[in-house]
Amino acid sequence: MSDKDFIASPAVVAYAGRKGVDLSDVARKSGRTNLAREDVDQHMDGSAPTGPSAGGGEQRYWDVDHAAFGSVTEEPVTRIASLAADNLSAANRMIPQVTHHDRADMRALEAFRKSLKAEASAKGLKLTALAFHIQALALTLDAFPLFNSSLSADGKVLIRKEYCHIGVAVDTPHGLMVPVIRDADRKGLWQISAEIADLAKRAGERKLRPDEMGGASMSVSNLGGIGGTAFTPLVNPPEVAILGITRAETVPVWENESWQPVLMAPLDLSYDHRVINGADAARFLAHYARLLADPRRMLFA
Image 1 (tube, one colour):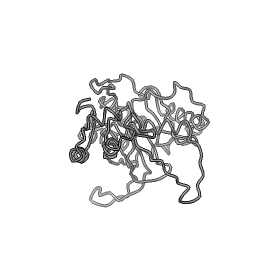
Image 2: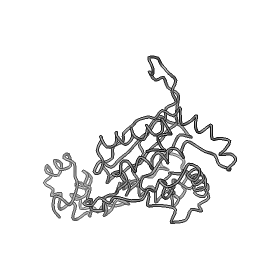
Image 3: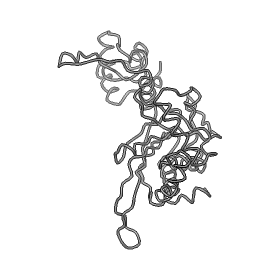
Image 4: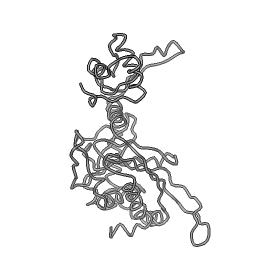
């Protein structure tokens, strides 16, 4: 195993050097690719790595007797939560992720949405801001196709997608699920709104079909109905970006030589820095915010 077959921080490299330990030998014998100081110690002790991290360079979970410190209960982790944990752990470990923050003026959109309330009710729908967000995201992906791509497993090929599928993170009693709205760029507000409600309902009931999961161009994590002012959503591989939305609030904005109360929605765009740079992200989110600020632009984007 060569130096390129493992990852170690300068501090770990220096520590191994002081101990006279060859890190290539540590990596080969332990089967790990991400080496820490503990790996060097275990190598010198001749002990084998234990726990879920053994052999794969995964995150360590030390075996602690929590009951020694007080009363505890135990419950199994659901399969859905376990799968999500594995995927997000891999994302956090493998993707050099950056989050760009911005906000969008929601005054015109909210006025338009409220004007459609009676029509939505007649259709048996509840037209939420999320439907507009998904429509705006589909249009922005068309304008910035780099965000609608994926890297090959070896990181040497960029796969550009000619479809536009939007994943919608849904919080369910069984764990986080991300059903996908297929061909969102070809659908109007009413259809998107209906699909959001249907997918969210069936996600909570664990009735989603396998073909309704996976294959998204990009995902949306919407915490607007709960709260918060900002967060850092984790990119859902093999996607290269994810959009986070938190609760809109009215804030003072200097406009037309005076302070105006403006309803603003915080936006959080996390992206894979191997594919997307900071300027790309800033332009993407600025374009997205412009569409939300004037929904008429969505007709001509």
